Length: 307
Image (cartoon, rainbow, N blue to C red):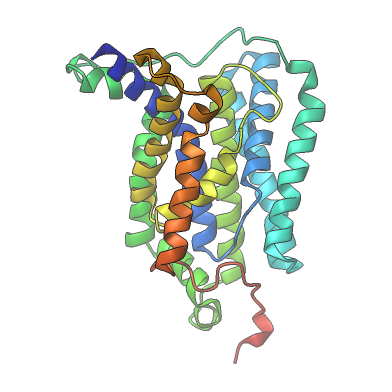
């Protein structure tokens, strides 16, 4: 039982990395902007967060700095795809290459260095005392607890607020939305920047709170998994909640199967979540279109086309 509790506990910690990025990508894509730069943005968030934490010892500034760098990269993507109307796929891939290269170049001096401080877990009174459930859910750090609430907050914004409806409308029918008084360009800029900030936070969480180290390419494909999880969640933040922790669980399952004396090549164990993702995408492609896919996702918006 203790081994199972450990696996589930670490699954929550691991899944939080992908949850922040997935929610950020859902916000961006709901507005109609496709962002394939998640991997590079996560790496920049991880590098910048670790850089600030190592040199200042201030973990709040580290998370804030990662959010800002993620937001700036989101701003670049927004400028390229909304203002200049560049191809969204090309712009996103360029961000991934940029983030991967820059983080590796400037982060080489941080490899092997350890942080003097780390984000400490907070045991929630009463709840952390609950057998099994308390040990799995309520002995984490503040970023994990915030991640518990985030999908519900975003769902509420999507479903119950004027801005959320404007966001979804901009991703579905931008021309009609503009006619009805919604500033589509402004909405898409905000969504892309906010999404980038959450992606940057996911990277900082990985380097500062989860791994507590910096390694080149440490996201290990999580940015691409994020894009797949958006499809898995059907662009719904509540489903993303479960999908992210499922991925975290699969990651920890691969790392912990050896504890149960199951002879299996370590490379294949580490690949379990990625194999699952590929199989899921194959399943989705066979089923056809997803119901919540924004109709204008990936399409440039030309205000001149208004009638």
